[in-house]
Amino acid sequence: MGILTWIIFGLIAGAIAKAIHPGNDPGGWVVTIIIGILGAMLGGWLGSMLLGVDVTGFNFSSFLVAIGGSVLLLFLYRMVTNK
Image 1 (cartoon, rainbow, N blue to C red):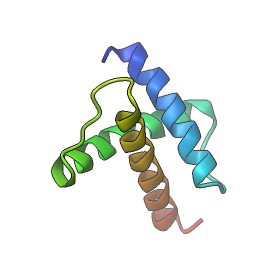
Image 2 (image 1 turned 90 degrees about the horizontal axis):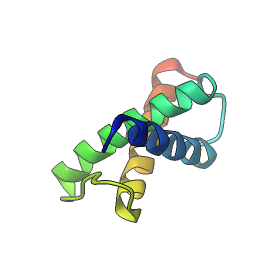
Image 3 (image 1 turned 135 degrees about the vertical axis):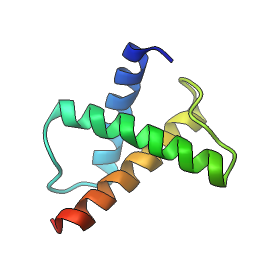
């Protein structure tokens, strides 16, 4: 995927992850994009290692993997910062 596609994908995945895992999370929309992109990378890595599923483009399974990784990333952030 191109860089603009990753940004849009990250924004959508990060926003959905913040809606699923509400609370006092960091930053605004820029941080949401970063959390979404990093979550997609984390979810893609874990998904390919454990389930054989990867983030391959704009499709349903990629969104699920990216959102799962973003929620996991938010969960880990809260555990580290104790918020």
